[in-house]
Amino acid sequence: MQPHIIMSFESSCDETSVAIIEDGEKILSNVVATQINSHKRFGGVVPEVASRHHIEEITICVEDAMKQANVTYDDIDAIAVTYGPGLVGALLIGVTAAKTIAWAHDIPLIPVNHIAGHILASRFVTKINYPALALVVSGGHTELVLMKEEGDFKIIGETRDDAAGEAYDKVGRVLGINYPAGPKVDEMAAKGKDTFNFPRAMEKEDNFDFSFSGLKSAFLNTNHHAEQIGETLDQNDLATSFQSAVVDVLVDKTKKALQEYPVSQLILAGGVAANNGLRTALGNAIDQIDTTELVKVPNKLCGDNAAMIGAAGYVMAKKNVFAGVDLNADPSLEFDLLDE
Image 1 (cartoon, rainbow, N blue to C red):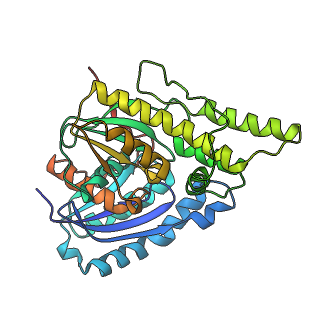
Image 2 (cartoon, rainbow, N blue to C red; image 1 turned 135 degrees about the vertical axis):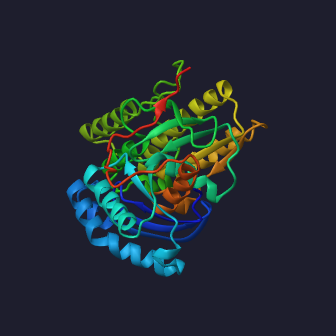
Image 3 (tube, rainbow, N blue to C red; image 1 turned 90 degrees about the horizontal axis):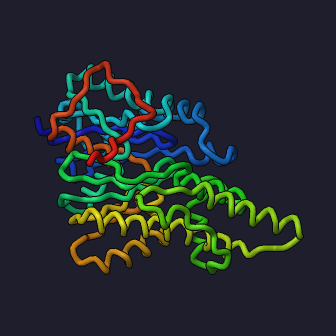
């Protein structure tokens, strides 16, 4: 079965989203109800608060998405839903809504990995040519994913501790920036200089893994020491030094991966993929590799949204991946490591 019109759900963290996607590459509607204002005062996402908001918003998003796309349930060929990874309570809201609609209207159900959604959001930009490599950088994930063919995802490198997005939020709190800190730190980084020379962790190691906990600690220690001796540090320089350390490692590891795994396309995806410093640096690096095209997921689709789940659902349906009403949330879902 190859669905023409897919209704898709995303509720893995703090965005409730429902979309209507045509042929896996055209967005008829993409409704996103964000919870940022609710979590700002806590400095990060509170799972229980997130789950309650999903309950309040999910049916409204369904109605708005169908109205904007001008479709009825008779027009829907399949339902796609994120079932992991993510916050278990948040995931369950989307999974339950999707299963209910699929059962009530006798519509096939497609289970989607959230990270596959981030990667396959690139389908809205261009056709994916395989083999391809994806650098996924978000609040909860930082990994390099090799795709030898459509629907095949294998991790060749991942973070050993904090994801890049987590590090941005923790550093942002020190700089007095409300959650989510990434966009503001990126803005400040464009105004400063890399004067603190923070560590580039694992840069020399013979693997494609990342680590950002040491960088975070170095940043916190530098700031704390300055406070103890009464020294005032330039906030923009701190932001630039931090972001330079993050971007340098991401770009260098990606370049090394491309040397070992030559691919037709490199896909930059995930919430942190909207970072201007990263987009520019990676673009400059890939310009030097004639055989690889850099595909950047559009900024408006880098964050969590249901359109990307619809794109991934289309690919999963081509692989004949469907689920029944026993589908459950899998908060720890992950791709397999590449087994060579």
